[in-house]
Length: 203
Image (cartoon, rainbow, N blue to C red):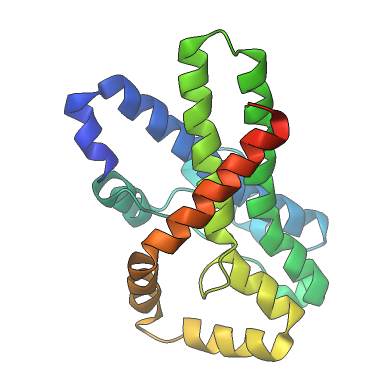
């Protein structure tokens, strides 16, 4: 179910969830851009992506999908692997999910700090859940996701095959269909990771 349904049923929840999603997606993409920039690739800076400004990172179609279907995406950060090398490319790919895991852990700590504040716990719980979803989902080693970039850097021959697949006209639709069909096991993994983060902090 998309976020758009909350506009009439619970406008406050819509605003909180939409803001958390937008900021979390922006931070995820900023992390990719920042690490690439620090490792010597000027491409993200050339495209204005080394910024926390959400407008620079949001994709119109991906945002529309998020509102209507509850699933969307931001604009991928352009990089030049030739400027980064094999391991630099790996770290750039890993930066996005790592940034979301760090937010999730920080949020869990804040949930412990504000344990007596119901509203704060509700908001922080949403932020925690969103960032766990973004981290785990993007680590899935299938084309178009960060996990495939990490896997490709670890196994270059497989990375070339994944890149060839991504270049195909219908690769996006195939990946979306796979994610839809595998939504239940993906959901189980995400719930387990969220539970682990909460247990780690003692929430």
